[in-house]
Amino acid sequence: MPPFTSPSEPDLFAVRPATASDAPALCALDVLAQQDESRRAFIARAVEDGHGYVIEAKGQVIGYAVLDTSFFGQGFISLLYIHPEHRRQGAATRLMQYLEEACRTPKLFTSTNLSNLPMQALLTKLGYILSGVIYHLDENDPELVFVKYLRRGSA
Image (tube, rainbow, N blue to C red; front, side, top):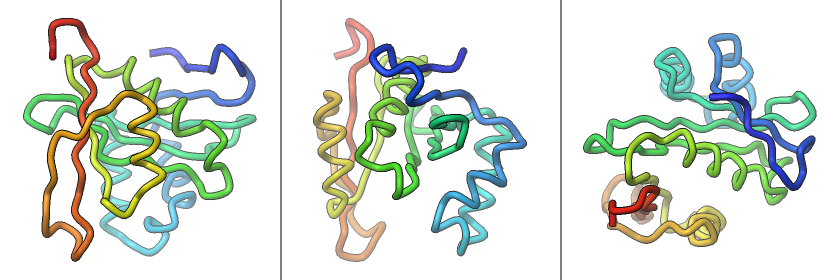
């Protein structure tokens, strides 16, 4: 899939599939990956398997996401990360739009913690609906699962 640039702001963001050379930059960008070997391994595996996507601003990687079909054969965004300095500028919206185009299943799922109000607001804005709740993944912070129907006839 070719890089995606916003039609309204063509030079602001570009999204593309991640390459092996991106993995170190993604790990350096992600605060949790800087401290957690399992997160670094997850990022490296996702990129190696072709499930990683990066978003750039002015040629600089500012975030990434992981999209695969491991969730009951449906598209699932297991991770979306935008560097804190670049949040609330439309990058997550652009990255989500790209992932929706890249997804080849009729439904696209993702999840976020109950405490992550900004992500919940983004998902609502983009037309995702609550699909379920998973307890006991993070202590006292349930995981909310969302879905978006991408193709006609999938509802």
